[in-house]
Image (cartoon, rainbow over all chains, first blue to last red; front, side, top):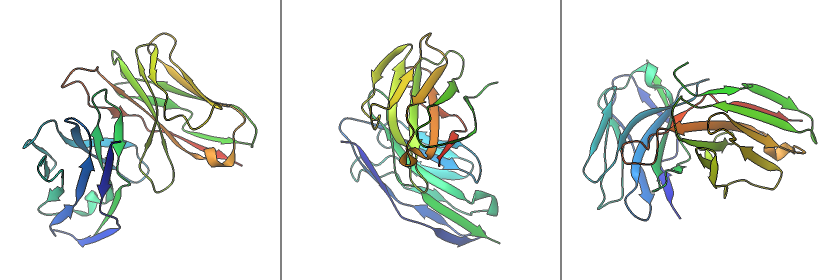
Length: 111
Length: 116
């Protein structure tokens, strides 16, 4: 079945550092790929998405590119802020839309 | 409101009690999903509705779990004879439909269930 593997956290970075959170997936067909973010005490929010190979999703300075050849969807940001501290979930959706999530990566940004 | 709402936000139940969790999806959204999120884990799929039809309930962990969406809008997840292992956050999500471009799911804030 479908699965998502993302790097384990927690990840601790200093403010303005470069962020990469790795994500790889296994799926049949051509899934859509997502990054969701969960801020402390809040619900899941869609951060960005890509629906086909080579698409780049971007939002709030975060980017991820759908790489079919490596089955990856790594999340990057050039300069993180304290306000980016949260748990980030990589996810994919199957053809009839059930979303399969990774286990989440906690990011802590220190001033 | 514009988003998915869930109630109650918090529920404490004694082992053996029945609970009912409500989800109000975004108006006009055809698809509705329930997920269970254990502490420190990603959400796990429970069940999926398209309008009032429950098309997939493969993720429901036991026959104590039951979900319905009788009029194709509001949905209720019911857990009978709750057990301690049912303690989790229960998330509801909705999406516009099944066509490409409609598949993005929008999540509610969740109901945190604690079974004592």
